[in-house]
Image 1 (cartoon, rainbow, N blue to C red):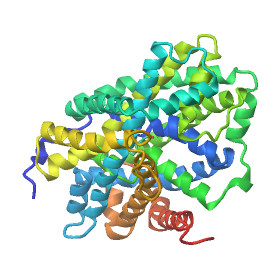
Image 2 (image 1 turned 90 degrees about the horizontal axis):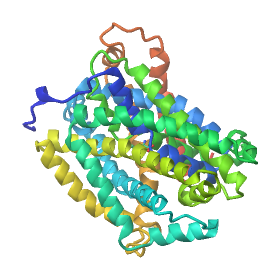
Image 3 (image 1 turned 120 degrees about the vertical axis):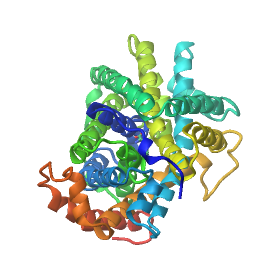
Image 4 (image 1 turned 60 degrees about the vertical axis):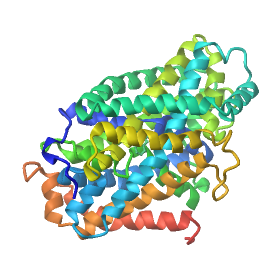
Amino acid sequence: MSGFDFNSRDSFGSRLGVIAAAAGSAVGLGNIWRFPYVLGENGGGAFLLVYLIIIFAIGIPVMMSELVIGRRAQRNPVGAFQLLAPKKPWFLVGLMGVVAAFMILAFYTAVAGWTLEYIYQTLIGGFKGKSSADLATMFDSFRSDSLRPALWFVIFMVATSGIVLGGVRKGIEKSTKIMMPMLFLIILVMCVKSLTLPGAGKGLTFLLQPDFSKITGNTILMALGQAFFSLSIGMGTLITYGSYIPKDNNLATTAVQVSMVDLMVAVLAGVAIFPAVFAFGISPSSGEALTFIVLPGIFQQMPGGMLFALMFFVLLAVAALTSTISVLEVIVAYFTEQLNLTRRKAVILATISMFILGISASLSWGLMSNVKIFGMNIFTLFNNTTANVLLPLGGLLIVVFLGWFFPSKNISDELSNGGTLKIRFYGIYRIVIRFIAPIAIALVFLNGLGLMKF
Ligand code: PHE
């Protein structure tokens, strides 16, 4: 067993701090970069509808479950399962989460690095006078450069490590409390701007009007993966954050509030992006380049556009940072508690290992473009397998564990704070975690992976 002193564990100091940190984890590139491009490629409004259903029926219950496990055990994801299910293989779910954390951090921090390049380009006027085609070329040549993406990755990674080094209360809580409200304000300004463009209506229709013929097994798998990714669930981030949440916090309320903030930011990002996409006649299915190719084009056609571009990319970087710190914290909590390293050593070890993975991911279109695994480059492999496989699988195992292998009394005790809160929803929650969520995830999985057709 580890010699970590669990009595000296750090924690969040206030209710607002808990929300800021957890919402900070959830809200990020997933909402602003990934959600619009995945929605754009998978049927627009129809995708949004499926996404909404998944958030409510599966996402919120899974998030509650992670918070329950974390706060009950007061441990990192591996230690939590070891404590709650001694001598059973459930800790492997936690370990899978740590592996997912490495993979997510690698490609996610690479994208965060792209936002730094775009802040830089905005500042030096690099977008000025460029057509959409020029901007596409610019993005492609940046991404396939053999140095720049890796350089920005390293800078962003070091910033993330610096905050995590500060610890839970002074590093994570303090920084997210400042960054989250800032983010919200900037995105609202962006929405107003986008909605007042001529022809904005088409974008809203695309985003909000479901065309049911567009819903396929793959759409549903993509929506499931996006929901898990966006809510930061299925890999132990919220087990880790849950372990820092004070005992008097209402976990169900926290899960609902965080999920609603996350959903709202994703929809707001859609409202900021799609009207503009249609107003300028750009394809909504431009893929992962959507944000980076389309938006600079839009900005420079707006009065004061460069100011908006600067605000937008700063927002993206800030949103990404509050998420990367939560992913790194999973690894650091694991290293400190299971391997008994100091926080400082844990951060250094994690950061150095991340350099190898992340530099490889960030050069996926450059130096590493010849490396293909299952036909995908490293970046795409990490992006797809985490969101569409590891996270839903982790979520499935988490609810099965709580629903079938953990005493119901302990769950209701944790959700009701030892009987002091009314938990009228408990009956429904229990049915969801025992039956609805596992069956739904399994079906979507089998169908989406082509292992079964229904
Ligand atoms: N939820 C974050 C986002 O949407 C990404 C993330 C995934 C963070 C998994 C932590 C764990 O950007």
